[in-house]
Image (tube, rainbow, N blue to C red; front, side):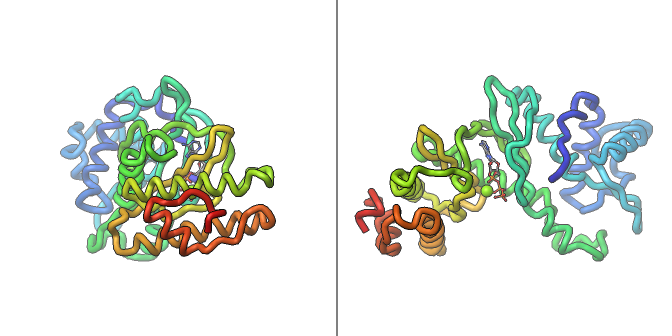
Length: 300
Ligand SMILES: Nc1ncnc2c1ncn2[C@@H]1O[C@H](COP(=O)(O)OP(=O)(O)OP(=O)(O)O)[C@@H](O)[C@H]1O
Ligand SMILES: [Mg+2]
């Protein structure tokens, strides 16, 4: 988990954000931004850069490396601070709350807006980046794909999918997106993996999930990561969330991914509620979903 930067936000000055933005800009060209370029990139005087740089290094919003030259780079915390600052300026977010979920690929927090929302920071590419680049010459600029880029693309893909699917599919309502972060409606209920369904309801809940999978397919997307960890259940029904890997239905792997989604979720119900979920012909279920004819697993 990357630390929660919200507490430090109030102490930052506009010039601090100029410096962070300047480094962000420089990272489009090189992984480590040459310190000598910072006055130009951040439009601050050299003295101001010196002062702000020390502050941002202390807060670990930036990190520094000296190899052939002195270079600085944003950390994920610094990138989080930039996104939060933008949300605050747009008045999307005006308070920061408790963690809602910490995954390998994201950190999700409650945030305050006109009502409670969820803010998801994408972390894709981060661990991978650390692995791939460990021990390498960091100044090598070949195949320069930064973790920021990977994480930002994931957030954009997820936001695009939510915007297309909402409200026809039960997904969290998308509110705003910036850099690697999205703000969306906060779900109520429980993750399916932690829910104890009344056995009599299990098959009905599975049907609800598969109907949303079908509705998404009809709207042009395969979720591609359907599991008990990406479904919330509540009195009001189910919500299917976590869409960064969503794949358009005209993609060559779409059918295969749909297959896997159906297998995963039906398999979960059959393992957890063996006597309450009927055996079904999964290929027939998948075909019915793709043809927009699915009603209930009991039909197959
Ligand atoms: N809109 C939301 N409202 C409330 N809680 C949420 C919301 N979005 C995500 N969460 C919580 O945060 C957790 C992680 O979110 P999500 O599944 O989208 O990210 P992830 O990167 O897939 O995490 P992981 O790698 O662990 O699967 C969820 O399991 C859920 O508990
Ligand atoms: Mg998830």
